[in-house]
Amino acid sequence: VINHGGPSVGEKPKSNSANVFVRWPEEGSKAAQLFGWAYTNGFGDKYQDFDPTTSYEHNPWLKMHPIDVMERSGKLVFEYVALRDIHNNEEILIDYGPLWENAWNSFSTVHPYARSGYFRHSIGVPPNLYPPNWLHVSDKYEIKEIKDFESNPLKPGEVLPLTWAHNGKPVSSKYAYVVGLPEGFSDKFLKYSEEIGVVDLYNKLLAEQEGYHLPSDGFAVYKPGHLVSNQTAIGQVERDMEFFAHRYHSDQFNFNMHFVAAWDEAARLSVLKALGNAGFDVALRGIGERFGYYNLTCFHGSYMGVTHCDQSKVIKLCFEVSIQDTI
Image (cartoon, rainbow, N blue to C red; front, side, top):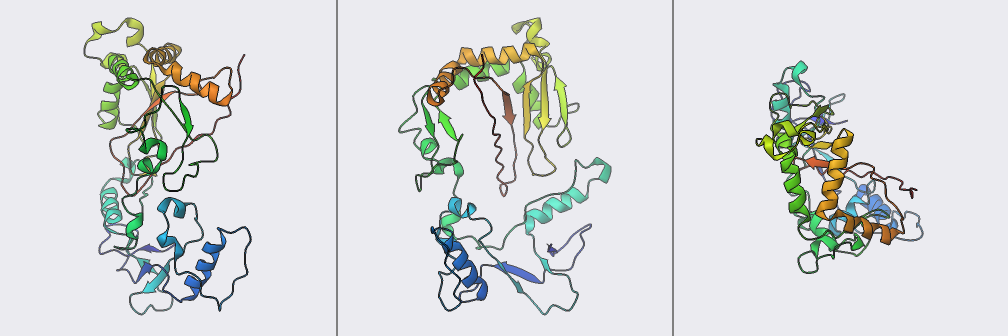
């Protein structure tokens, strides 16, 4: 572990200034040769023995698409370069960057008993470390089917595997698909969510208002129907429906995402009926036809809401669920 050596740290881990910095391997260095060999071999059917007399491509990953680079984890290498003479038994320190520094200073001002959990934040990298072809690349617009939505929208119920736009390869070996929804689906389901108070509940959860501030991984049950300003717009059953809220690991990632989902049977049936009224049955029929299912069981239907997320951290949540025909 190499600790932070920024200009100032207000609480542990205390340190002096950084004494090393990171860079990609210098051309011709042993590290550049070794990892150039390892990286290149990963694309072939057979591994070739490392030959120190052979000139391997210098840092080949820098020329590749960043999505392909992410799949090559473990075959990239940095060099730690001393900024000054380092004495025996002296700790190695690097600068974690201003985002980390600011986040730590903000965290350290909070009383330990008032903190939501342990401190965790992404470490920054030196300026210009990433090549231009890695920057400003969004997963969303690198997926061909999503990129083509405006020019070639999906038909309702159409199901297609997700593929990368730059190489045509599947985003995942299985289960990564996109399904077409009928026109107006989002507007109809949003209107339902507003009517039963789920949108009002999110406004309070994400603003961390009194009574709605959950700790990291915290869980609570609410009746969002009681938050609706026009109580005559919904019936007693809708007012008393229970939904649970779960604040997802905000101590591990710098964001405030909350899940909200039906808790009691009345809420569960209401959400499923609203999905059907909005046209979701068309999507389910398309999924069934694509994979040959006779029936589908709803494992878990929930909302996801977030207002802020550290731009240096990308969160991907994937749950692989075995779906079996039901009788």
